[in-house]
Length: 229
Image (cartoon, rainbow, N blue to C red):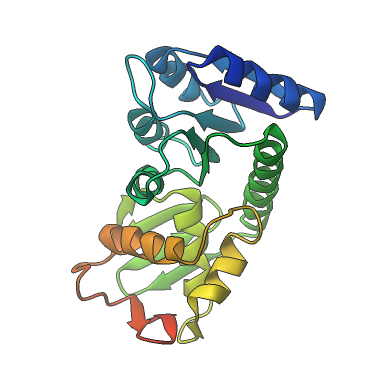
C-alpha cells in the first residue's frame, strides 16, 4: 500500500484529502506543522508528499528543498497561491506538480496515481544498467545519479527524466509540445512553459555557462536538442 504524507495546516482540507485517498486504497497521514512535517518527509517512509506552501514554522518551499537533498519521490504542491511566479518557484525548488486551491480530491488522487506510476516506471527502466557518457557528463541510469566532471549533481525526478530523454536521443530536435507530452503526459494540467522552466533549471546544474549552454541547445522556433559534444 502506497503511503502518502499530507502536510497541510487546514484540518478540513487535510482530512478531506486523507479520506479520499484512503477510499482509493492509499495509506495517508496528516501533519499540520511545517517543521514536524519536514522531519517526517525526509525519513524515506513515504511514496508521495503533498505539501501546502503556507505553513507554520517551516514553509512549503523549505520542505521541498530539504526533501530534495536526499529523495526523488514525487512532491505535489497544493496552495491558494495562484500566481505564475509561485508555481514556477515551487517547481524550481523541486516540486513535480502544483495544484491551486480549491481543487477536487479526485483530481489530487488522479495526479498522485499518475506520478507514482511514472516514478515506478522510471525506476524500473533503471534496473537495466546503463551509463550514458558524454564529454564531462555522466548519467548513471542504475543509480539515478548525474555527474558533471566527476562531481555529482542533484536533479529532481522531472529534471532527470527530461535530461535522460534528451541525452538518450542526441542530435534530435524535440519541440516543447513533444517534450511536454513525453515527460508530463496528462498528469500535469499546465502548459509547455514548464518545459522551459525545467530546461533552465537543468542548465544551471550541468552547464559550465548556463547562458551559453553546450549540452542542451535551443533552436528558436523549433525546440531543444541535446549536443553530445
